[in-house]
Length: 270
Image 1 (tube, rainbow, N blue to C red):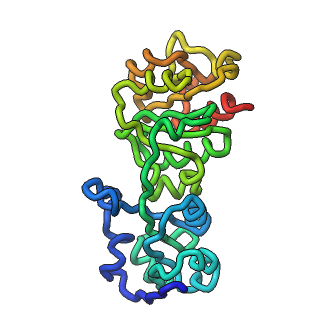
Image 2: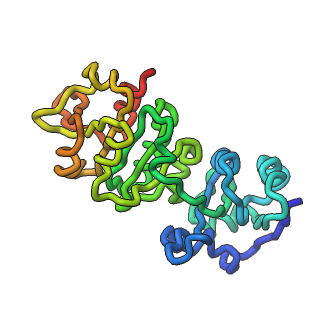
Image 3: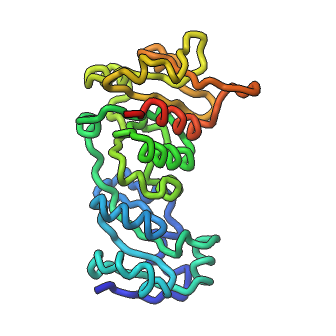
């Protein structure tokens, strides 16, 4: 039975988690056992629950308690549900909530690289991709276009930042992912796991994305770099292939999220 708590004042301290804590504070590196993230919209919350994420509290429009949030709340026992009218929520967030619902959840413990890659045939590697919108879009493409897992370097954005989760439409809970624990030699680590590595980069020695050798690789890691600068030269040097997407009309490159979708579609074919 949900524990409904009516909210009339957006400055209420119990709403700090939604209104005033930064992503860094939610991440809580000093106390990872109590680290949190925010899921937004019923579809995203449902995917998080399906993945085993544990809810801490909800914030939603009052009308959704007996409406589209009803089935979700029924899965969550007596978790506190802070309910408010729309005008209070707009004060709180500065904009309309996506589908009128937020849920604070505990961050799950991240698996090892080996666990994420077990049984995988195609994986994406994101080196220092900084923008949460790009992270979310890449995850959505990875889920839709046959990527089995995503690995990230720690200097990039976190897939559980609120915007990344929202843009991904909750696919961050469907595609296995983790951060590299040791980033000094991750290309070699992937080689040890049986993967050949394909660096997406504009180089004179780049092969075209439709090169048949790529599709014929039994296990392939598609490596994408940070916005603007792309992949580090050392990373490219340690990859088995350097790959480019053929362009026209004088365009030299795509945004990393758009490039990921093209690459995943071509190289994720089964």
